Length: 201
Image (cartoon, rainbow, N blue to C red; front, side, top):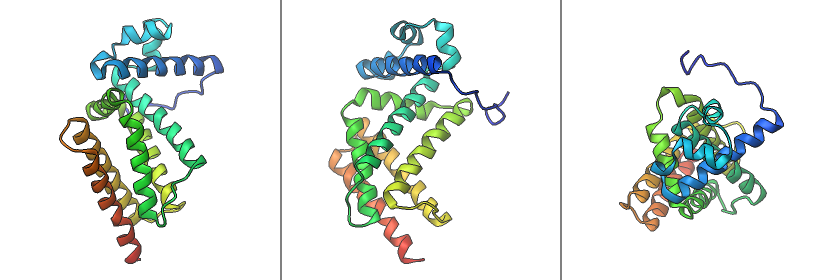
């Protein structure tokens, strides 16, 4: 069955959800210690206290697991941001602050950040639903910072450009080709597109 035709999974029971969260924690800990290569599915299963077959029922591959960890991290970030919203004077400043807060959270655990970004980069069509979930969450976080509930197509296009720039800046920082100061400048520059789109409406 193709990724596009894959039916929605039934809701997890409380026990299944607890097991899933244990797997996510184990995967994140292994990635945090040694990056992408350190995440071996048998070691994840052992650390989470589940059988290897059980692990594969939740996450068919290491890439599925790491993309799910990124989704989980973004969900935590979204909750934190809604509890303590960015305080910029305009939408561009608020989005820039939001993305820099996300960047600083990743900066605290660079091995995990590298593992998650590499998983997104390696993801093929079979991981499309999980990658799409990460993209939707990122878009929702940016729209929250902009204060938009019903964005126009033009505004959504601007958000996509901002997300691409943030992702690219993260990759170049992780590879050592870009400083944190340059990441901040790039993000602030691309967020200026928000004001430009507002001026043309």
